[in-house]
Image (tube, rainbow, N blue to C red; front, side, top):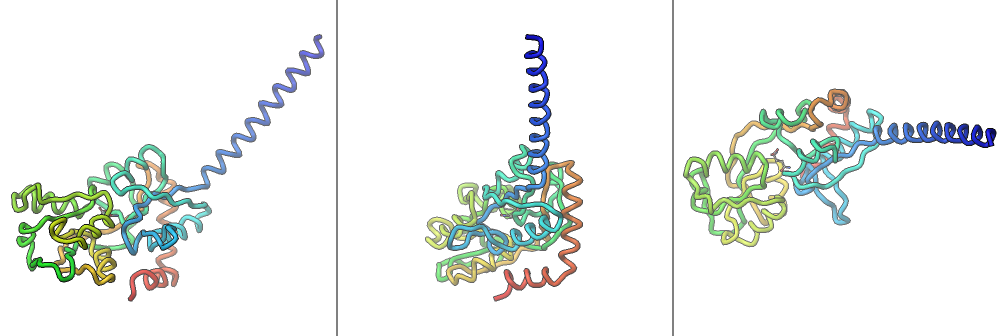
Length: 259
Ligand code: GLN
């Protein structure tokens, strides 16, 4: 009876040791895997190819930077407005979504060094009866933007808060792809969209929509990590600086921004 007890104890201790080793192995593995959150409605930075695979400048870039730093990468498509909450609750580790570095966001996340500059632009439907040559002209139309973006904030602060645009003529969208689809339906839905300038150019390539106005906002995009995660942001900065000094960077720019 005594011996049985002893054996039982030894087995129990062994099981605990094996269990601990197995568990720490798991932790190690999950630490090396980075979940990147994006909003795949923003060509050429992040969008879906015909198979539904998420591709784009940001996706190639962050994958290259993180794999160079020894991580494996998984990309998840989340609405733009839900990206910061997803980061804060640990559902994702990095945001790669052409996210503008702003003082307000800096209170909530840590940004990498800037990797791309942008302004805002106004898109309208080709052939629609819409005349916009200056900012004030926007008051005559329904104006759309994606919730939570700097474009949305510009419409809100510059047009709506000043009383220039009636609030019921301001239309918010979860996705910019839906905003552009509405624009193509016509001015009865939405007459103009305010959107980042490089993305406006990408949508205009379809020939259905065109840029009629540029708005200088001097924005810079950064990758974001959870506030206080200095280790990850340092690794991203190291990797990003290195990649930006190689021909990979030029090839990436050419792949997504020429023709
Ligand atoms: N650059 C803009 C922002 O940060 C828009 C980004 C986006 O819609 N993906 O708000």
